[in-house]
Image (cartoon, rainbow, N blue to C red; front, side, top):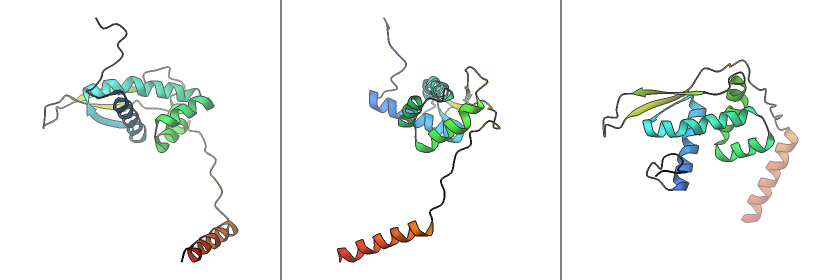
Length: 151
């Protein structure tokens, strides 16, 4: 009996499985699509959809959790571009398209991709001001002092 058994194991231990999910999710968010085996695509689809749903709520604690799971560039794109674009949609942010089997081992392959989102609804990110010359000069002076004190 399979009571209370979640998901698939994918021949990995727990830490490797979590790392795989985080890496698949980050790649999908950054590139918009992902070609992988059908089993991995099905396994990652629900995880990515939950991440998008969490990002839509725009809560500090949820954002910290998302930042711990995703790469920096993926987190920024998810929060600033993708989640505002899916604001009107209640779920079903991704789709799986089956493609030809892999030549080497005939594994079933699939393409996991985001549906079209409203790209006009992106958050404006406040950009930091460029450093002034005074700050740069102070850093250069500190670096020179370090170099001279080491020799």
